[in-house]
Length: 354
Image 1: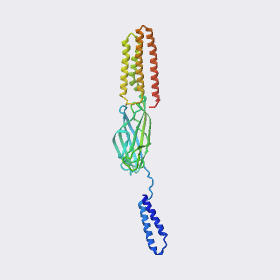
Image 2: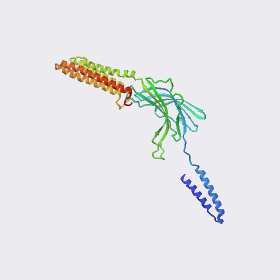
Image 3: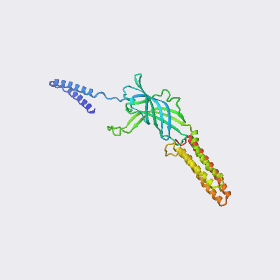
Image 4: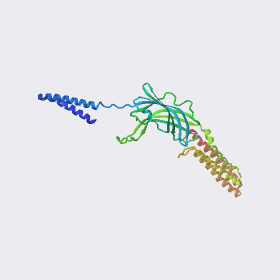
């Protein structure tokens, strides 16, 4: 392109030079060559074409309508969503309906496709069923809030050729839609971009990136927590109560004083194992870990002070033994209840994120 424009400048310069020639004997040759140069310059200009205008990307009006959200599986870190997606766009955008992607879906199945025209534009509707990936926030489980997000983009046109415009008219989800065990707190639909730091095989420009328009549909949901909390943690509190009964048994009954805490400890460990089977692995310290850890420590101190109480009783210090049981029992129950209440309050108020 630069070489062609340089040729035009040289041709125009030659024409100017011809105009400066005044020799009468060369007038005919001058006029002929001047006309030839002008025709050649015009041909080059037509071949080059006018300066390219900045490309304006086509807009695609896109919307979503959720039909159902179900099978929220924390262990597998997924949930299932059924929804409609529609696009209204210029017919020049070919094959757009076949390049639609649900970026954060594990599985996508198309139940129905409707293709029509609307005001001279192409109108495409999809009914989809998707198994969505989700990194659950479990720090405050079961008093957790979750953000469910569906990311929709196309794989053919980047933002230089296409941008999404969200269709915000009407409802975002079916008013009859419910999520078992959850309340829908807030919904939002917005358009952003998805950036890929690769040229997907193009090597013309080093460090090339690809940017695509992306529609984000989000739902903030809150769990109905207290019923689930009682179901999951009742075993842990019963295990602690069994171990705590030790302080009401005379030190002379050593078998009972040591058998009950050991049984309570196994029950608490089993309860923790059951809850862990419901949740995904996490390196974070969750409310489940803290409450069970406090229970394990309480049972351990129950056994430790039972040994001390038994030692007093064996040396004839029965009054000291009973005093130890009474004081230690009060301290343990107060600390245990206080820590539990404090941690539950933090979880309910979502202090510390998550």
